[in-house]
Length: 374
Length: 151
Image (tube, rainbow over all chains, first blue to last red; front, side, top):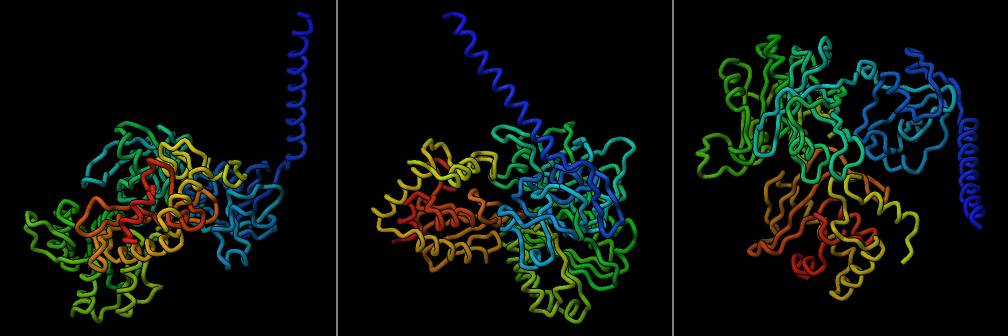
């Protein structure tokens, strides 16, 4: 009887092991796609890769980082690539993200299809230059009650190359109930002329996985993965008057842009109007620096506006919603007849409202720029 | 009650850390289908229709967005403050993505009558009759809903 008791579990274990080995073997045979060639942008890059992984992960292994705020879970819709060869039909998890134009042009989420053979894709050229770094938090500064500025140092000897206005992705590790690393996109507030550092302004979003980590757990000296640079928000090389509007942490790309314009002298070569909206004085920051730019540079104009100043603020500047203030200035003698470009950074609601005001004053959509990830 | 694979997957996606830091279930240990069934009964007892209430909340949130983050008073009855962040959140039912916009709606003159809603929570309410678990940050309590919407 004792022997029977021993044999039964042993037999079951043996069978289970055999079954697991068979599954593993089958997986290797069935899902072995061997070497595949990914042709990027009509052959500008030819990558020889091992098939079987998602396109997103395969490209990342080749140091090509497609924007992905969710890290490849199919929940952010940012990792779109245009396929120039057949990669199969769209899967249900892709469909919420696909526009009619995407479907027509064979655009797929790169995290949702596997590399199973030779394949051609098209991606924006600037993605060839995106890199992933293990960056060290050098300084964390409270800008307001809900915005922190985080200044990272890249590894020694490394320097990154980006345009003022672009954004990066920060990845935070699992913490508390969060079981997986999580990535989110943030505008860079640093200057490209400080290539060994990158800086961000991060506003606490209630329930936000990454912003909660940054505000409640991140410490100076800690290392995080930073993937940089992304985006096509940057100053266009024209002589048009720049009408810039931001609120809250939307200040970030403008800090980068104005610092760079001071460094290269372009701040004295074209007119810049910067409208910054906040609720009360406690939500304002960098006012001294921007006011100083306004005083020093004749063509730079800083217009802070408070929508609900407190009595104790003793506020002497513009009041009202930033859209109301913008509306007022766009009919002023300074701006009315000027050739203008719009530069926006803030919440989607603010972007929509500012776009409406700009359109009302005949500014063209094609000349109004903002972060694509907004 | 037995749950479909779609609901099992949705309940998994509702756990803390999957889509949002705190998840959608609060400290409620019931299954998704039981939460929905209980809230459908509560709404029916209060003579509230999910679609009608969701539409009214959507209108209030949309009106509140015009304040660009500042409180807006609507029909001298509701004070609505919206807050938006960049990016989108996927539905736990994997049927779409929604802007990160939330609104706090309170009755003018009665700050204790307050609801917190999001673009996603209204979708879950309308399509699945899911008002979120007890203790969840964006739980829509039927009695509070009746009070705030003055129905």
